Amino acid sequence: MTGAGPGPGPGSERVALAKFACPACGGEAVWHPGKQKLVCPFCGTESPAPPDAGIAVAEHDLARALANRDPAASGWAATKRQVRCQSCRAISVLDPARQAQNCEFCGSSQLLPYDETAPAFRPESVLPFRVAESDARDRLRAWFGRVWFAPNALKRRALTDTVRGVYLPYWTFDAKVEADWTAEAGHYYYTTETYVDGGQTRTRQVRHVRWEPAAGHVSHFFDDDLVCASVGVHPGLVRGIEPFPTAELRAYDPGYVAGWVVERYQIDLEAAAERARAAMQAHLEAMCGRQVPGDTYRNLVVRADWSGQTYKHILAPVWLLSYDYGRRAFQCAINGVTGAVAGEYPKSFWKIALLVVGVLVLFVVFGSMTGGR
Image 1 (cartoon, rainbow, N blue to C red):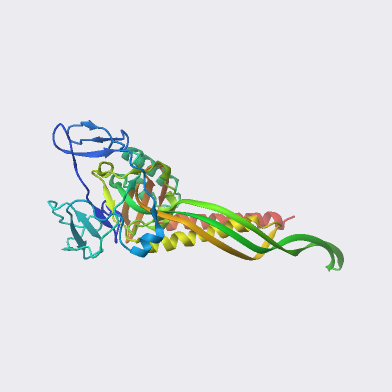
Image 2: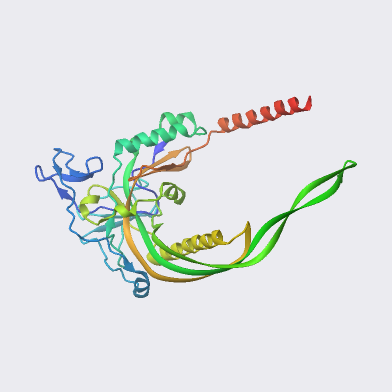
């Protein structure tokens, strides 16, 4: 079992953003979640959080962006150098002076220069880390202690010392919908049926459905529906630590991400918008279904009118642990704001076998007890 490096995994991009110099020693100050300040790791000098410049978190018109296919704000407003790993295909975006000897994600030394083929959206808002590294490790240790099927060796060597903080790229989508629906509403009713069982006449209740036409209207506003644009963190883990409190978003400032790893989005706006619309449509149909009177329904038809569709590109904080156990790779993720934990872990064959044997023994004991009556 070995640590798999500080990065999220294959297919990701590491963005090394602007450095903030310590006013006392000139060292690189980094964002400190516990203190909510910029702190110099060399001399301990604290600097206040980036000032609130009164810049509102902007929402952008989705239809216009998809029609133009050009980012509203592109680039990182600084000169960057990009390299691609020939092993895991990760693209790292670095300061020009930084010499990358090995891939941050898989450790390979097969790095080649990479040029951006199209302008990329720049994040315009960010959720700063609130959960400190020590708290993240404690939450991860507690989580490892609750996974009973994990091998004991994994719990003893939980690898929490390799946890790394990353900012994941997200798209958020807003939309207003007015929907009319029609369906057949089913109402249950019961009749008494007589039947013969083993020579004895018995009765039972039989359920039937009476179908009636129904119709209604749903008005709803989807606010900040999230679509994760990372391919470095496994999708199941991302869903497991959501949601993020987007009401606390702050206008983007490099100070919030100083000293942290930032992943460039790998799912573009068009693909993310398609995913968001599919999720919204499913949610809308569920809301309409809940309005149908009676006990069940069928033939639900929803006619929706969508408006006010907007988007924004944000960064969300995650503590990430990537490790190898045997020949497989696993990840654990912690929401950097709420502290929610989701993880993957190997399963112990012996523990599973012990559980199966225990269940079989219970069946045998229960069968012998009931059979003797």
